[in-house]
Length: 388
Image (cartoon, helix red, strand yellow):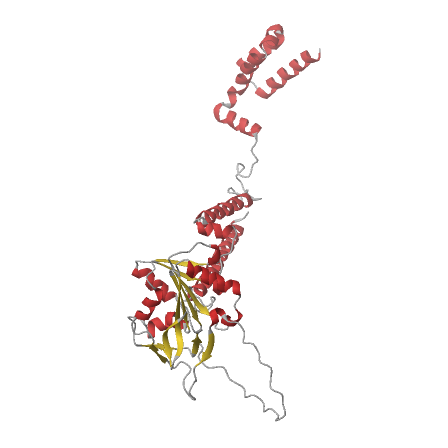
């Protein structure tokens, strides 16, 4: 293979490596921003994520942090604070009873579970009901749909011309708690609890926005505005005292990603990442590539058609190796003598029985004439003795 072909292959390999590196960098930047993950995820670094809270707790120390990518119902979790951020408030009416039972089971195991809903900035538009005729029959009563934990939702009124991100002040409904008297919320969502079992922590005009319920040694907290945990809120309007109370006194805090649809995929690569085998796989792939390259491109290039070097490009076998060895160690004028000596050793009995052959060998070792002619004479004489 010519030098030009080798340069072309090397250039192609370099361009391929640069393309792969650029593609990796592009994906790394995309995942670093985190906008591929749902709002409320601790993997997002944009305003809608909660990565800032995760990193702040990580730097503060004193607590064990964890991101969860598997179903909590299949794990034994106790004495932990579990954050379920970025939920849709419509899930209160559409949630499966099994999911509600799993959350209650986590609370009963001694965990503090915080369920925070995505902020509702504008109240849904209500269409006026059509006028009923005078003689119309009264409508049949419709049973209200069952909701999770018996919680019903409502919306605070929005003043005309008010900006979408106007903050709302909520007042403390439990004065005995060491919490700020007022907090600021972005969401217009309100939570109406049943008559018993729940206590209102914060409310706006008598309508609850943060609720708490004790079940055994655990507690369940419903927050109408998950923006309290967002990166934007921690930068622009940090409410540290409320966050400290919400996280509770547990020494283990779990940011659940599974309920947002971010789950851990099984397979060989997942196991390799878990046990730190990715560098080993990279080295094996590199060695495989070098082996394929070595097999496809010889390390010693063949001689060109006009090359004067006869040693380049010659196929070497055992016979040519023996010839080269003899040429390096035996002078040309001593070659026939050495061959006759080896012949006498190998065919000693035959030489002793044949006087003519013995004489030819002796003369060949002492004569100084053409060694090729002498060799042919000895070979012809021995062939005649063999045919007899």
